Length: 198
Image 1 (cartoon, one colour):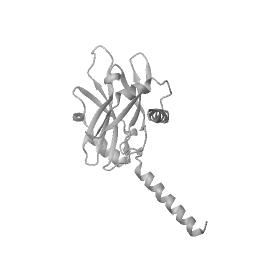
Image 2: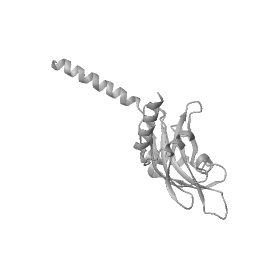
Image 3: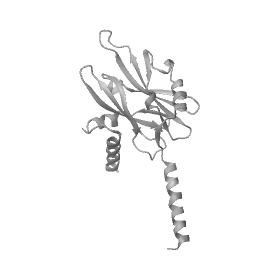
Image 4: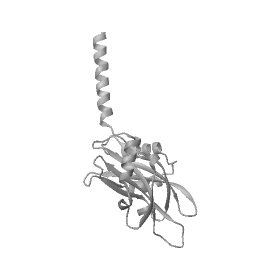
C-alpha cells in the first residue's frame, strides 16, 4: 500500500471513529461550575409533599453529553413515617436541563422499595451509550432498620414526556440475578438479556 493510500486509509478510520464516538452519549462528573449551578436549582419546592431535610450528594453530580445539556443531581430527603420509628429516607435524582428546568424523580423508597429506607447512593452510570438518552443504573445502599444491603435501580427515558422514569420491571429482575451489584456487571447483564431477546 502506498503512503498516500495508507494516509487516506487512516484518515477514513479516524473520521469513522470520531463519528461513532460523537454518536454515543457519555456520563461524566459535572464540572464544579455546572454542579453548583444545577444544585442551586434543586430546592425544597422541588421535593414531594411532606419531604424535608434535603441532602444533595455533590460528589456524584453528573453530566450527560447530550444537547441540550442534562445534569443529574442525586438527592436524599426524609419522609413523614411512623412517629415511633426511626427516620425514613427516600432518594431521588433531579435532572436539570440547559435552561434550568428541574424535574425530580423519586428513585428509592417508592414502588417495590417503599418498605426500605435509603442510606446513600453508592454508584451511578449508564446501562449503555448507544441511545441519546441511555438507561441509567443507580446502586443504593438500603436498610430495613435491621439490615443493610445494596439495591439497584434502573431508570429509562420516556421520549413522550421527555423525562427519566423508574423501570420497575427490569430493576426487580436485576435483583433476582444474584450478582455483585456494580455498574459494569449490571451493564453486561442488561446487554446479554437484550441479545437473548432478539
